Image (cartoon, rainbow, N blue to C red; front, side, top):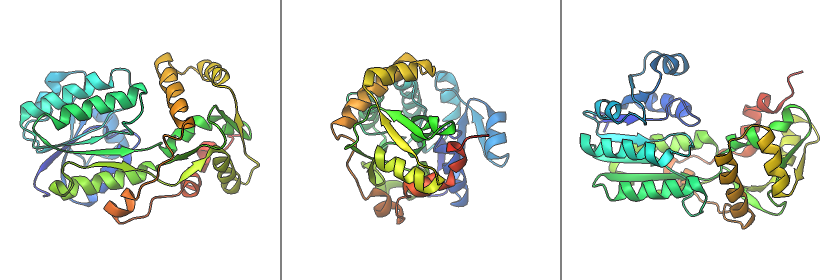
Length: 289
């Protein structure tokens, strides 16, 4: 399995930074497709096989995917996510890639990003390559934004009802699952792995923050219209605001409360807890002065 060449996209992103050392440790044959080689080297090291490729530049993808057996497809949220990843899928088919592993998401909601992931999964499933889809729920790193106010005070604000739980996933667990899937090759063909950690309410998130940071943290719930005004003033782009408004609606209906055993079943490791995540990233929620 190690002899097959695996192309990795999204290496400098939230999960990619954790995935790269895992693949190195496993001795897999990898090629990292990045827009800025120098930046990637500074972040991930000079002993990694980086090549230039841009999801907006189809010709660069054609060159970068020559001789590749498996494409790992991952890119950040964007209003043009579907178009960008379609470029990569089509280039992979042209290059004769045998397998595509896609970092996707919960495809069961009607918000723009999940709908894009669903459309992309359909394209991959019908392109003739073997495939596996990894579908993590709410990333714990989203708390960097949800709880951004903790850098200045002891409350954070959202419009998600207090009695609603959301199963949260540590990106390090996503990297662990991805590394396992890439290494074990055809063992995971045709699978769509819904990956979660424990389900927790935002009041329970506040309790966990309080315990770890040793501060009295409270969750402040507001009407979705007030929340929109708050994040608009923060400079969030309009497309992302509308996406998150729809996600809040689905969350309020309990859509993201489900819990799975995928992390344990596939990697053999228990999912990381929210307490562990906050402990490991406490400075991100701590006032600077």
